[in-house]
Length: 226
Image (cartoon, rainbow, N blue to C red):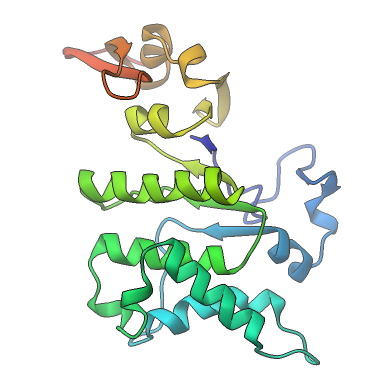
């Protein structure tokens, strides 16, 4: 699982200013929309849904790339929706309107939708935005499980550095659109990096629970990023 990178070029929402973006060795610019959607699923930061749509119907939209004019909805699609709802703990919400759900429940449903798309790669743009800490942890535990138990490659944007350190296998730290550091959290997260990227003076200690880097600000003292 990779955290703290911007997915928009990878998802073809932005055209690279230079070079190319490859997925499984192929330039994504040369892939058809359907072929691309069968390989990579994107959950944007603020997704929107039609008013009154049920959870199950929303999750079923993840199966759209699998439909062809000669192959409409099938038992395979039904099973994929069931599996996605079960994997995200949202099966009991299936008949409820998305409008009735809490922020944490909605995020689980959106993740179920991209999971139902059944792609090997998931791009999640700030999946913990607007969630309280408990729901942030719930969502990241879910995503980590999809990565480790279901073999999905997950790329996320996260601005909460301590959570990124805890859940990501690989971090890419960026400032002003440029990569500052990349590697395992324990290898790259240092006081110098935190000050360089965030302008924040901090200590970096081992998390007493997970053993991952834990950033502790030094009394709120702040410098301008270099």
